Length: 373
Figure 1 (cartoon, rainbow, N blue to C red):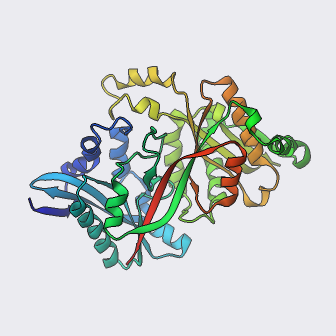
Figure 2: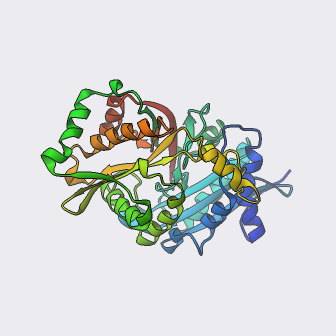
Figure 3: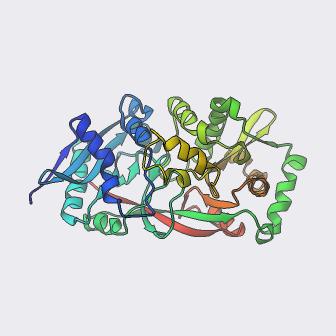
């Protein structure tokens, strides 16, 4: 059967693009369906603030009228200006176990990016490192936590077979916060001195003031990660967008800010693992999905550290240790006793050592690929 790759050209085809994973993963218990209404909004160029500084094309691969794979190609001007690159990205890669289709999809993304002057193709990025990114290469036996993906074990082979090579690995660390004895004693000592020695106060975020609190968190986020590989700061419009999305799932027990004389100097945002809820909804809240959501929300047993950061000039003060201590306190009064850190670059030696010192272990690895154009 002839293979054809073409851009998404209608609302109907965009719906096919969005829903393709439901068929590809229909027999995979570890795949968690996202909410359909959220995905439709995310891909909408008029509603996602990403498109205020980026362009993208969505592609579907067809065999005899049947969709067998998908990919996006996108150029983020904000990212390239910030990092001084001329990169193009690909993302949302999904495909049957079909090397011809995978090579055609990646080839079409490569062609689209090359025609627009890009010198490198990097991905998958869905759309940036502020979203889901990378292909799962280790940890297939685990359910993914919120804001992470589960993919077929054959995906790395498809991508490498199309000529892409590893650019960076991203580690997901599991950390149990119920046994303080596993943590190096020096961390507790440093945490004690945050206020007494440095005059820094740490408090929980206030859900009633969510947009401002998320703004404070993202001020730290943009400052603390600015030197990281692949990082791009969020715009004000994206901050408001994130605040709206995060408010329904924020738990004040797991969200903190550190302040010094009225200045925000650190922040930690940990989210209950709502994938434990989404797994029961099949992508829909209506007509009765919301009832299931309310029921299963009470049973969430894990969390995911969305991000934990400290402004560079305050990183010597022990704020991160204080945040870790507060996570142990939260675990003592909530049903959640552990979870996963947001991914950490393989090159971030200090953070990886810190995770080891906290008694953590790497449980999943995501890989970002690249190809010089």
